[in-house]
Length: 470
Ligand code: SF4
Image 1 (cartoon, helix red, strand yellow):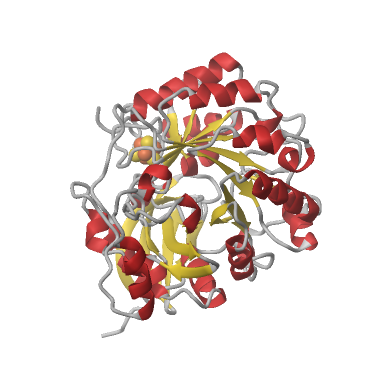
Image 2 (image 1 turned 90 degrees about the vertical axis):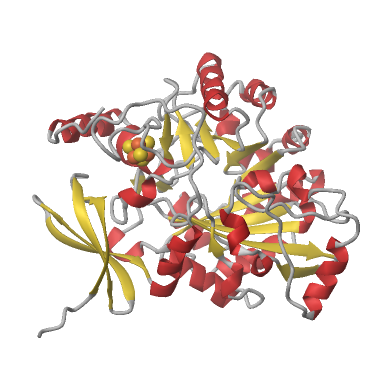
């Protein structure tokens, strides 16, 4: 009997990257990698690499925890996923992090920008719109875990400080500011004023590379000095900061270890988030055929470039394990200790128990950590922001540690039309609030819901399919 070229592993629905039609897709193992094979009636057969590590891809499924839902859904199930976003009643995860875009405009025009922002693009949201969106998040979540003010570049909004006050006045556990850092670097007193919003406030700072050529390719100019100045100001005022690094093959995938090493030395930095480029919006210097990176390749490269980490230090995040990978480290008196290897995976998956990081190994590092963790357990680091940064993370209990001792490595993959998987997008937990109160997954927002042209195309796609129930 002839043997197939590949091993058929799973079946899902995906999208045609050319026309965004919903198409059936097989997940197969072939050449030691995981591929999606799909066929569009108009554009034919497509084969997309979705993971370079078969064993890790299979392991992801073991980290899937019970869904948690928002207080209410906002749209009915009519056309089927992903054409009903709002969130629709078929979504399987609440908003762990909600992005609120307060402006379309930016003080840069990056060649890589999913929002296609520029100095004269679109408009600022009015204060009334921002208020409505904040209220929509609170209605949906009660006490939202993380809200991120974004754009465009949020710091150029003419009512930026009023918006910060409005956000801080809501029961948001952790507020973030997504910024390119220009104002933090260049405006005297800007960092000081931001720092006054602590605790439970953090800067999410664009930081793609140390190389001027990479920054010119992805950001349109050499921003190395801007990044240095911004970080000097953030260190000076002691404002918690996460670096966010957009990844593009051939540009910066060899710099991840160096970025982590650099970040670990900065007092203000609490972690680095790596995001493979989502094929969406403006991508002037990017070829999807050659420049995409899969999350498993990013994970392996981090492990290769960061010798202190092993395979147990970067694990799936249970609320959305396909999209998110996490690793935690402790910074103690100038030394760094990987922490994630001590997490009991079964505790992560249980929503009902008080999850804690457990320590069972009797090595030297463990003894040192155990000493720290057994000195009273009276302060819960989670209460200082650690836990809230990802709602499903375990609390760390210690009398002697603070938020400044923790360092987080996250890989955040926002699927695009190439690797889109309906099974997985239903667990998307990074969402974007809209002025009409709808809350839309980041992935589908940038494919179907952002621009008038996209929304018109969505209407066409809907017209070509038969509505589902409800
Ligand atoms: S992604 Fe979520 S909200 Fe959007 S259609 Fe699918 S299930 Fe509904």
